[in-house]
Structure formats: structure tokens, C-alpha cells
Image (cartoon, rainbow, N blue to C red; front, side, top):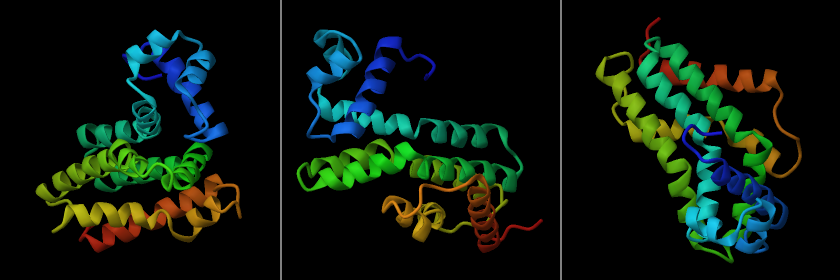
Amino acid sequence: MTTGTSPKRQAILDAAKRAFLAHGYSGVSMEAIAEAAPVSKPTLYKHFKGKQELFAAVIGGQCEELLNTLTQAQTETRDTAAGLKAIVRALVDLIYSNEALNLHRLIIAEQQHFPELGALVYRSGPEPVLKLLSSYLTKLDARQALRIPDVGTSSKLLVGMLKGDDHFRCLLGLQPGLSETEKERITEAAVALFLKGHGYEI
């Protein structure tokens, strides 16, 4: 549970996540989420104004641990390779988690019926992750640990390296996910390639 998050708010988020994954965005009502939490409807609306805001909070919660890892790397990790590896491994763990894969499928399925979901999801998850990653890379560039002329592009390329065919196969259900060995392989390869491409010197 997030530090500072009330038990009732967390119960609502947990119930909402289960409901969205089981029934889709359109198949879930705020009343059903309140019943599943269980909380009263006034309590539910005290924490979340509507279903869109609640869904955004669920997506944001998925990225929370990753954001914490990014923040920790910025403040505590001076070893460039170790800091980057911690971030990339956190990204891999998130991207290939069952919940993230299921939410990804849900978002794509619902997008045509609820076009506003796309922007909502992006603002709640990928956008803050990319902003914090760009901030981290900017600091590495400033202290000349890496040479990164365009941190925005490099941030997107780093995340993009972790998906590709493996992620697409997982989304299609052709494989259940990645083993620990496969996650480590992707992490090591992405970090090595990223460091080499940005002038890292051992």
C-alpha cells in the first residue's frame, strides 16, 4: 500500500482493478465498485469523482513502484550502470506483469468505445514515467556520465527496447509472460546497448 494512502481508498482501488479486469471499463459501474470495496457510495465519490478518475488512479498505481525506483535511482545511485539496470529491470517487471498485460488488452479493447481513455491512460502512466526517466537521464548527461543530446528521444528508445516481439507475443497470449532468466536477459541487453550508444566508459 502506498504511504499516506487511506485503507478505504486502497480498498476502492483494489476492487476497481479487479472489476475492470473482469468486466472491462464499460461493464463496470461505480455502484458495483462501491459494493465490492465495500464502501458506501458517498465514500467512493469522496475519493473519486467518477469512473474515469478511478480508472486513471488504477493505471497510476500500476506505475507507482517504477516511479519510486526512478526517484530512488536519481537520489541514491551514483553508479551509472547499476542505477540504469535497476530502472530497466523495474520497467521489465512492470511491462510483463500479468496485470499490466491484462490492462493493456483492456485499454485497446475499450478505446474505440471510449476514445478519451487513450489520453487518460497516457497521462496517468507512460507520461510521468517518461518525464521522470528523462529527468534522470538529464542528470547523467549533466555530470557527463553519459552523452545524451536528446533525452526525450533516448527515454522513448530505452522503453521501446524492452517491448518488441516478446511483448507482442505476451499480449496475444502466445506466451504467458517472461521467466526470471528472460527478464534478466532483456535487462542486460538493453542496458548494455543503451550505455554503449551513449558514450559510457567503464
